[in-house]
Image (cartoon, rainbow, N blue to C red):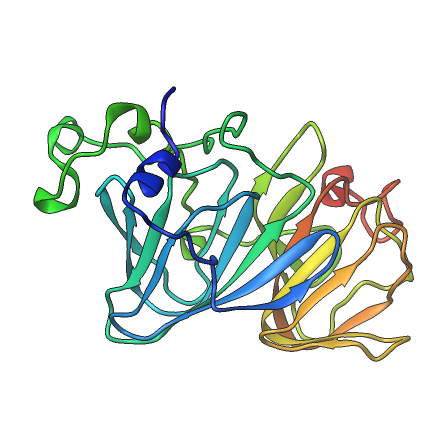
Length: 274
């Protein structure tokens, strides 16, 4: 049987798999949010992921991912960098190769649990030149087996390269990062300019998760206020709002299904409600 996820290799080497972050900062039936913090040169040792997950960088730079097969790959994760992994990668470890502290939040979506026998492969892979495909990974490290290499199908987006797209609510714009057209689930960055907000109380057709990257965003009836580093969850069908951005605010927004049961009154474009 193929060992594309490296669990057999880890067992043969006597490797004990570790947890995927330093500590859990929030957990409920829907998500588990990890803090990942690495000082320069530190490593999160070999581990594997059993759920889809998003990583939001809160600070850092150059990291290195090394699989149990010896394949090494450099990553660049400055503040605000966001990546979503929707398939099971091989057993791997993460090392901070920069001179600054790496800090991130890793959000696992618990409604999907992978098993090695049935796990999907990640859905996209960065293009490689023919020379890069032929060269042993890691600048001389042992090459990864061909069947394991196919497991790297990651999606990588540098959010700074995306333009903000205005929505039909004044002061609101977004950068869409990922969407499942079949289920309506999505991940995006939204920006509320200072003084703007959602004008009415409302509920969502799915669970809504938000992580505040910058600003100060307040839910007026309850006074719940999102500031940098805050994670917010509003369960499906729960009423909240209206809201106001007391400072220009940028939020990572995740839905595990459709945004609204019907288009809300503050939008004039159906696409803005998706």
